[in-house]
Amino acid sequence: MDFIEARSNEGGETPWLCHVSLFKPHWPYIVPAPYHDMYGPQDFLPVVRAQAERETDHPVLKGFLNSPASKAFSRDDVRDTVLRGYMGLVKQCDDQMGVLFDWLEETGRLQDTMIVVTSDHGDYLGDHWTGEKMFFHDTSIKVPLIVYDPSSEADATRGMVCDALVESIDLVPTFYQVAGGDPHDIDHIVEGYSLCPILHGETTQTPRDASFCEYDYSHAPLAERLGLHPDDARMFMVATREWKLIQFEGGFRPVLFDLVNDPQELNDLGQSPDHAEVIAQMQDRLFAWTRRQSQRVTRSNAEILAQRRSSGGLGVMIGVVDADDVSPEDSAKYRGHKVADHRALR
Image 1 (tube, rainbow, N blue to C red):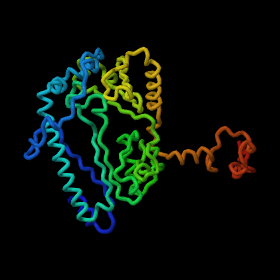
Image 2: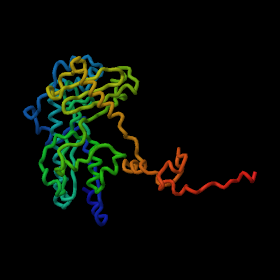
Image 3: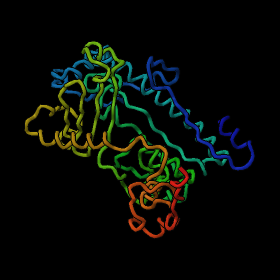
Image 4: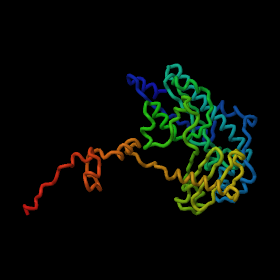
């Protein structure tokens, strides 16, 4: 609140962006009163896991299941104890955000402030026999995203729930557009899609038909236990609305989930001969993603298109033998000009 108020005291309309990073809920799950005993087993969601997951033969999955956090959260008593505190910490965050939002409303700033509530990852908390955040089940990668857009353009979509395939990288082009910029101006610098068309009711989906994640676990004890070179301790996820594939470096087989018939992701189809074609198709999607242009940061696509369609009338015309090989406009300044013959001066 002090930060926002300082921007307003600088005189005139001073745009600002404030990133409020709430550390909780997080280890060590120490919860102050009155939040420590607000919740109990009657408030918990059922744990999501199957015995077949615990008996997996996949070296990476088995390694994650054998981590200290996974072993702890596989115990119901540990899970129940932590969930009490975890939910209390979420409530504490909620109350503190309420203090901020009330202040924004009291000061009139709620009318011109976009608010985005999201997270960097989820938490297993015993689901799939594991703890922490180290894999690509929805438990870990499906994060909250609540957007309040104060503009009148967003009035038609207030309270709407959207099932679009959205990635966290979509926030940067969204903020850029909200600040008055055209997202296409920076498509050569950042990835992602502005969410403004969804917020303004122009569409209900992003242009993407798949979402992606990547994780480097080369720093983790598991990579040491598996004897992996850092380049091999990596995994990637590609997910559509129907399928989710996890691809591993290091020579490990893929993992596949049928999101339509197995939405809780309990049955790994990565070794199923009947799904070899699906796996190949999802690998093709992943390979296409790895080939994307994500390194060009000097010229926009519009500039590149304009440049390649015109020589600009300047510089050396490489490969041109005769003036008639190019348009009169491009060759005008070269026609009729010859270098003086200096051979007689030798």
